[in-house]
Image (tube, rainbow, N blue to C red; front, side):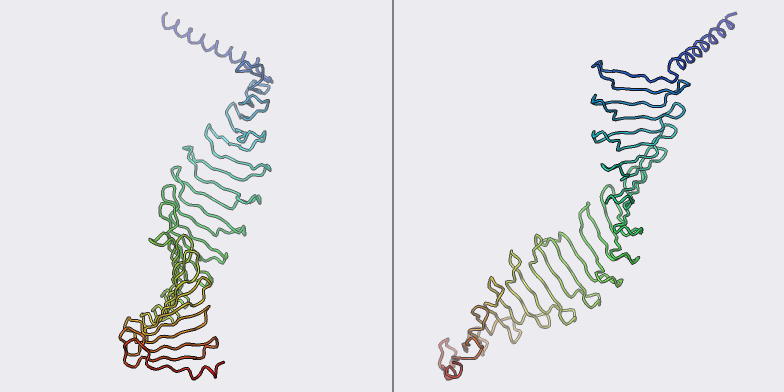
Length: 370
């Protein structure tokens, strides 16, 4: 008897539940329920039911301004879509699609109402792909790919021609490598390497012939940027430019492509040329110094390549004025020449006994040049 009592008791409970469900269905069938949850006299939640009493829609006014910022749509009693006004501008700019209780897709709209971003999620709720329209032309041009909720790669169609031209790989949350097809010819012509998210090196094929002739190195102490160029594509860098805080400070050039530097230019803090060295076989032959207008002010020449200056040049407003020469290589000038504005010699002095005092002075050509 105890068993039968227990059985009928359970059946009675089921019957009560059935009656309540029928009652619930009959009460809410075709209804719209409005609720004032915080009792401030304003409706902040609305529920809509179909004629069978199954919920179809839930609307929520979070800030009590009379506009429902969240709208949940239901299918067979389960949430299928969530719409949100994330910017509080009374425009539904976010839509989440739900399947079997799990978010599968999220759509984001811009202020004009156009779709600008779509995110996709896997069964674990982890984001796997994001598509973006970054220039508001109603075409997706940027694509992010994720694994375990961490970004792995980003691809982009920068010129909107329908073909991917930029590829970025990530390590952690930071970019580590980028490849680009700048002219959309199907070949990579720029590669960028990152360290901790900062650009450290770039290789460029600026003439799009398949050879990377330009290399940029960033933050290589003491320089903020070093730029190398291989003009004749022999794998030797013919031009080397060194920058400090984006100002060119030094430039080295191999003019005859023999692998040796032929001249070096030095620049001041404003980027003006202040000194230049001409070299031969790797050794400095003559050093030029410039004024604030980048005109020669003086020069020093090592004619016999012994590492010592043996000719000195002096300029006036960029025009040669005086030449001093050490003919016996004792480190002191013993020949002096003075020039006029046409670079014609107007005076010559010679120290015959090398005591530093001129012994011979020739000014005979002054009358000729006047």
